[in-house]
Amino acid sequence: MKTLALPAATAPLSHDRLLALGFVTLYGAGFVGARLGLPHAEPFAFLALRFALAAGILAAIALAIGQPWPQGRGQVLPTIGAGLLTVGVFSAGVFYSIAGGLPPALSALIIALHPILIAVLAPTLLGERVAGRQWAGLLLGLLGVFLVLRHGLAIQPGLGRPVLYSFIGLLGLSAGNLYQKARCAEMPLFSGGALQCASCAVACALGAVACETGTVRWTGEFIVALGWMAILVSVGAVSLLYRLIRHGEVSRVAGLFYLVPVSAALSAYALFGQEIAATQWLGIAIAGSGVALATRKIR
Image (cartoon, rainbow, N blue to C red; front, side):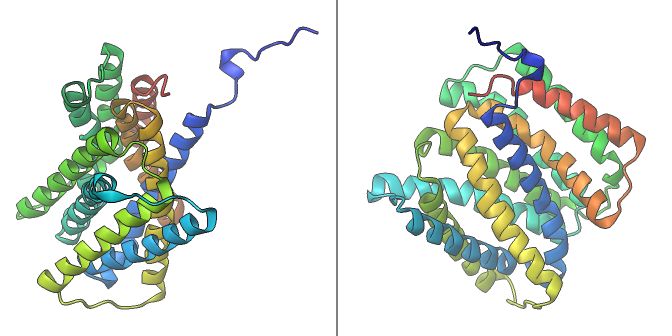
């Protein structure tokens, strides 16, 4: 009997598309977790606890399934380096910028430059080809993100340093993604992630000792935020990101970051009742179209 194939328009979502959807949803939730937790702890202290908890969870999973651990300097050092950039520098930059008074919407817009930065650097550093269609999608996605976040872009005087922190986070994220693809693409997700989170926990703890008072108020809201950031973002979202980078071109995967602030806006609407204006809904549609164009044919 002849088997009929589903038309392309009605075919189920591919595995990579489902991973991308999960990544965007979980990573966008990180902005909500930061908003919940930062009033109760300083940035480095919050991040040190978050990464320590995530490292323990990832290590337990790796041991339970018998996953091998990175071996030798040739595997361990690149794994740590990529983690410190992608997770540590990025998170510290964003948390310190928000703690310094920068509106989360403006911080998210700065981080949304990540796909453009990757598209510029990936051809030279990784030999990836960025097609004209991808450039069109990236620019369309940036426009959509701006429309989504424009209501939160009330720039206040004296925010030069917090803006700088967000740009440091942007550079850490972009450099880490490129390094992850170049040197750690085959990293075991759980054991490698545990090593990366443990390294970031140590670095943030040292930062807390050097720069902060170490005060943490263990309120119910902080505990929820800590679990949220450790489990949903550091374990869930980052593992999905690394899996996408392993199987796809980093320039295409980077385009997904346009949907992260969109996901954050939708999460804030669902959890805190923050209204979404008509122009923001338009921006969500435009950003989605741009991402679809920029990330087409992720392998």
